[in-house]
Image (cartoon, rainbow, N blue to C red; front, side, top):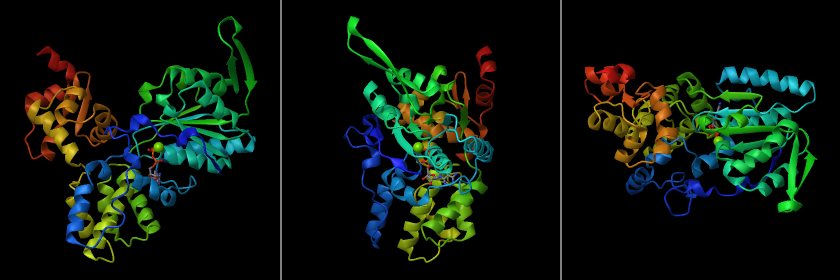
Amino acid sequence: MTIVPTNGEKKDRKDSKDGSGQSKAQQPEKLEKPEKQPAAERDLKAKANRTQVLSAKETAADLKSDATLRPQTLEEYIGQSRLKTMLTMSIGAAKSRDEALDHVLFYGPPGLGKTTLARVIANEMGARIHMTSGPSLERPRDIIGLVHQLEAGDVLFIDEIHRLSRVAEELLYPAIEDFVIDLTSGKGHATRTMRLPLPKFTLIGATTKAGMISNALRDRFGFVLRLEFYSKEELSLIVARTAKLLNVPMTQEAVVAIAGRARGTPRIANRLVRLVRDYGHFQGAETVTEDIAVAALDSYQVDAFGLDATDRRMLEILIEHYQGGPVGIETIAATLGEDSDTLEDVYEPFLIQAGFIQRTPRGRCATPQAYTHLGRTPMNNHLGAGQLGIEFNKE
Ligand SMILES: Nc1ncnc2c1ncn2[C@@H]1O[C@H](COP(=O)(O)OP(=O)(O)O)[C@@H](O)[C@H]1O
Ligand SMILES: [Mg+2]
């Protein structure tokens, strides 16, 4: 697999939410080389804010270790077995016919391995991969410049494909469907369109917001595949693999403790391994034991379910301010002082999957499990509201 540099390298302006003009991914890594001093340890914890610890969003530190950690082949890729079986068959069939693989759309929460799979597919196909993202393809010339580089069999990966502009999306339709592109020149009466053929390539799209993709675009993918959260067993395999690749001696009990707190997400599992390793260094430990792993994660306020301070605050707000819901995500976000997109994309999917929050037509509800987790007794009236949103309306 060859990685062809594209305009995907351009920085995504919308990434920068702190107004400093510097995206989170650009911020320097602060955790990799801690000094052996208590003050430095405090500093380390203070700096390891929850965005770096449990957010599934990519950080600079993640990118740094990605090169070592990303699986290269389907065999190395752990979990997602249903999806892997299908891809193995389809890749085999495409290769035996000497054709490009049909276009693939991956969707699911951040950190589950969409980008990794795109690279794995290119690798398995023996194809070059061009990597870009929706926001980088704003103008027609961005798309034209990109498809111009394509050769037969290449993979074109568009991350955050739900953020493609309308113009870009429409220009892409014939490219995806018929492998042609329409070039327009001149203005007004003198406008001319020229249709140019393109080599057969594979488009791989990735998105965390499947609902924001137009039907027209979605229908043009041969495969629309959803990535699932990973089981504790799968995450244990990932944690053990990461620890080995990073040369961190670790007991199996520590592996399981980390896996249990990784929110079903490989990116977080990898990050927790790095945090635990750093903590182990401070303690002068040669091997990471369960005690060290648990103490490290506790000190970062990651609880036994993998919930962090923001998760717990979200549940508390639901329960204490809004009697367990139902309440709209915007209202929760405003009370929490968080961005509603971040809550919806990064925090909520796992809270729903783990059974702490339910989504109803009238808003979010805390489940009995959320009450118990926070050491409170579930309220009966709320329960009816949360689980039977429509019944609630009748009251
Ligand atoms: N199935 C997997 N097996 C092992 N490691 C994985 C797997 N999926 C993802 N990872 C690891 O998790 C990290 C995040 O994956 P990535 O593909 O960037 O997620 P996404 O694109 O869905 O946000 C990668 O660096 C990779 O090392
Ligand atoms: Mg990605």
